[in-house]
Length: 213
Image 1 (cartoon, rainbow, N blue to C red):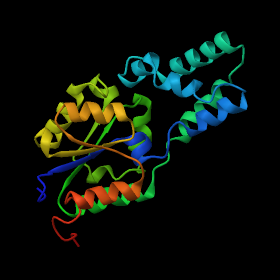
Image 2 (image 1 turned 120 degrees about the vertical axis):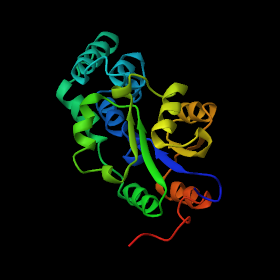
Image 3 (image 1 turned 135 degrees about the horizontal axis):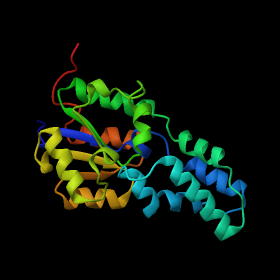
Image 4 (image 1 turned 60 degrees about the vertical axis):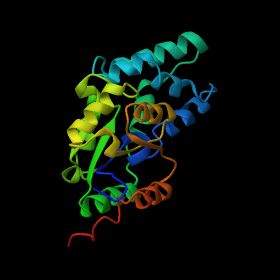
């Protein structure tokens, strides 16, 4: 445990360990002459929430998204292109992978808490993330609940083997940070890798012990 009482650090996946997952969707909406937020709103809406709890497939969501946009705006959406836009967000930030490894090297437990589709597991277990360095990965599609539900934060602390107040959590969405804080976690809004590393240093997660050789 660090001098500040932090025993574990947990990161969101999309938008924290990876690049902005919505950028390609905004770009595609703009190409179609649609409001740039239209696909993002769908991805943050109730239908995609069913994807994130494992109750709906990505393909079924894509079909819904295309039908919905055509019905509301009279614009045809290429389902393959939209699928490619979702896949474009599956690119890790190298700086964050290094940060995960640096924290683990200092004996602090590291984990991931993600609202995700079950189809994404094949990607994040393919070697793009250092899963062997992680104490736990809590995937909403596997546990059947999603952020900002307070229960998923409690489950994360349990799987990380610490009390909620000993867990430092980073997320790029304010509502998830608020949910984590309400569940007792030490939660911070992710803005960029440099600020995240600085916060980990400030809270002792990068100076509790020298790196292991």
